[in-house]
Amino acid sequence: MNERSHERKLTNLAEVTLTIGLNLQETQTLNINADLDAAPFVRKVTEIAYKKGARHVHVNWMDQEISKLKIKHAPEESLSEFPDWSKHRSEELVKQKAAFLSIRSTLPEAFSGLDPDRVGTFMKTSAMELQQISSARKSGKIAFCIVCVPNEKWAQRVYPNVTPEEALDKLWEAIFQMTRVDCDEPVEQWKAHIGSLLSKVDELNAKRFKQLHIEAPGTDLVLDLPDQHLWVGGGAVTQEGLFFTPNLPTEEVFTAPKKNGVNGTVKSTMPLIYGGTAIEDIELTFEAGKITNVYASKGIETLKHLINSDDGSHFLGEVALVPEDSPIAKRNTIFYNTLFDENASCHLAIGSAYPLCIEEGTNMTSEELNQAGLNTSITHVDFMIGSPEMNIDGIHPDGRREQLFQNGCWIKKN
Image 1 (cartoon, rainbow, N blue to C red):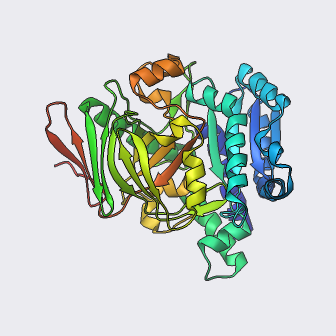
Image 2 (image 1 turned 90 degrees about the horizontal axis):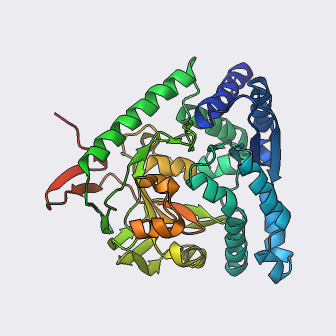
Image 3 (image 1 turned 90 degrees about the vertical axis):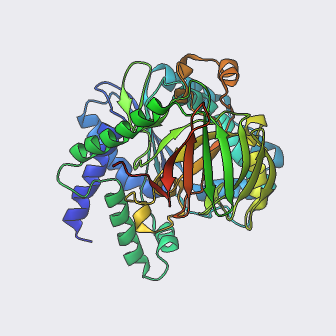
């Protein structure tokens, strides 16, 4: 890859991350959680953030190899503990209305071969440790964003038939294209893209569907929608009116199903990487919203641990629609990374719903959200179900059906 071209696109990605992703404000504090392999990009983001007037940039470094050593060797009881100082740090950053950025460069199966019980405990504790920030995100108190950069091992998993150097170059180029930064005016490109997603959101919110019916090979699922449900896409708004885009890239529009209103079966179409473990060929059965039967050809114990995280992890929190003709889907590549794979495929999320998916939801307590039909949980994990064979109908309150998806794509208007 041409070094000058790469540097320009890397700068574009940092600019888009701070401007479109976080909408970082002058004098605002930026908190970054980052994998060690992402260090060069973290430095680039930090530089631009300070130039934009950031008051502080705090970086919390993460390393999957260190986590792996803890899972493998630490005392059993330590896997379910997290320090009070971590909770207090999160509380202080939320109080300051800091912007939260995750820069991930993960290994797809870092925890493969480890005891799934210990991995499950570690992942549940990690979710509980982040609960303060997760709650602030869902209630609209803070702006947050996630972006991923490649590493050599991940690149080789995606592109196994080329040299490690070529694989890394290919994955960088793919990420630059998927995040729309391989152009002269990426911010303007993003504004146009967000506008098209917001237009689809407005169209769906005007429909006021009562249910969605999703059909595909291995999938026949009916999802009730809460009376006051809202479709969301392109970005979100904080309680103070700041628009931001949580995922870079993003191609989805999504809402929350009614907690007790999901019935039928669903089959995944891509691997789910969760807890450093690959889970493949997921098949779930739902009755009155609850998962009643679980199957996976690989990683089933990890999947069961996810579903047993708490009461809410037995239910769904999100249904997201992504057409097969979207730019990422058309690449026809499995990236073994949820951020990219979920934006190439319709997907569902096990666990918590986002309060912004219901009218006045960001002002509701957990009890009020449950009464309104939204699920709450310490976890929220997407798994992909889209395919070229997928058909989706929206069902109106009077029972009338309206086809939304045919053969994996939005129905074209005349």
